[in-house]
Length: 420
Image (cartoon, rainbow, N blue to C red):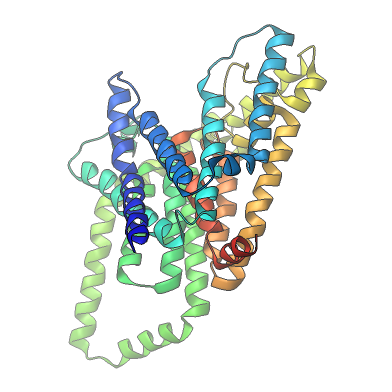
């Protein structure tokens, strides 16, 4: 009984620490904008230290470390790539933050996986963490927006990101929370789930990020398909009831819906028209190239990085192990950055890791009909490929790790754990 109470206490602490992430990240944005230290990085290190403490308290920490041979291999490989390039090219790292953040995300994912195996966290806890994050991130964006506070993203006051520092990382976070909200809505169709989904959609629209808007559009299509196939009888009942009510009630319902549409138009017309205007300008600037417009010109960075790779005296070695974080810029398309920084071997390791998560999570798709989460995972990979800012960023990376942990936290996992 005492052990259970202590276990519940630790879970409550984990819940609180992860639930307040939106407030920490907003505060971090204020700190960075005013040239102060990054409170976000310190806080995320605190999260890792606390989870390691719980793992050490739970059992043999050496056994847990020894079970991380694939993670250790990947981290050692990253350092070898850096050292080989520094030795051959006699160059210097452009930034210690890029490899550090990538390694941080790798370690954090393994720690979450270990916490799942040792039942320190479970699906219910992750569900509550995501639910709280949805509410708090809506508060962190919506309330400053209403009062005219926070920061715009593009010229002409187009796009809004609250007090967050990086709009690209915020965009990735909102995509992750959107598909969690979609998953909840597809499972219960409650008013609360609907409001959360609409709230995240609202945040995405006022951000005016084209990649996020495209993913949000796909999410709405997924929701409609799910609703049609699972709630067909419910839809027909609503239509039948609406036909049979008196004129006065029909008028009141229609008036209420019209009022809601007017309110939505009032708040969303400016960001939507601003978004369309900006995309038109971008297409013109990129000479009509749709690919360049979708990637915000990142495709040109790929060409520049490729030329840099080919012109290297050790280009064959660089193709295999990358340039060790010594190039002049991030492409900001995660899979290309992995290739250019840690090579083809790094890409293959990443693909293996992705298929491992996908393979384990497909059981959840069959058992729980959680197709929206699987689609969310696939689209998150697409977002990472097109817009980046997940694998090399700790703010959005931590949400991606939590999302993967949520995918892995199913009954099949528990059965494997018992047998393993």
